[in-house]
Amino acid sequence: MDTVLKAQRDDEVFDVVDDRDAVIGQATRKEVHARRLWHRAVHALVVGPDGRVFLQKRSMLKDTSPGCWDSSCSGHVDSGESYETAVVRELAEEIGLTVIPEHGLRALFKVEARKETGWEFVWVYRLESEGPFTLHPAEVADGAWFTVDEIARGIAERPDEFTRAFKFIWKGRAGLVSR
Image 1 (tube, rainbow, N blue to C red):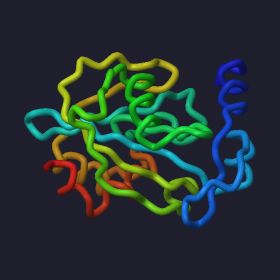
Image 2 (spheres, one colour):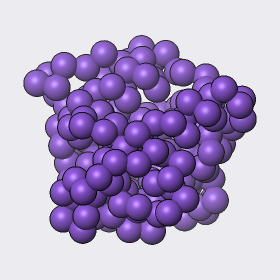
Image 3 (tube, rainbow, N blue to C red):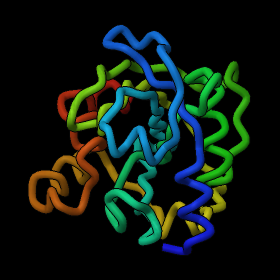
Image 4 (tube, rainbow, N blue to C red):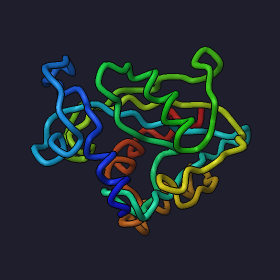
């Protein structure tokens, strides 16, 4: 990974939270991950008018799950930031979508912090859009549209090609996405 990019990422500050997702302090990204502290993240699933879901293939520069398929966008919630603000920021940063929350961005469900999410409380959002997308090369290597069945089949047949968090989020919840 580019050393400047890695240093910038390691210096990011996140809120550390307790088992009820209440803020109890702050720490750098590097410390949060090294100590497996509970923190916050967002995932967004962009659904096209035909019901297909846009997934991103993570950049090989990513420190976790490089080259794996993931939600349309995902990212940490910065210190002092709300989940909704974070998802809007991440959609713009990773795939170039400018989103006004009142225009179709919908919170689907929250996942409690656990090993599968990297000790993150995660709010998952749904957004209907056709793009166009502008993929940030340091974040996203590629992107593609998949049907719900193609995603389920891909996870079943090639689980190592998908991030652990995405597999956990997707499991049993695909019906929420397609609505």
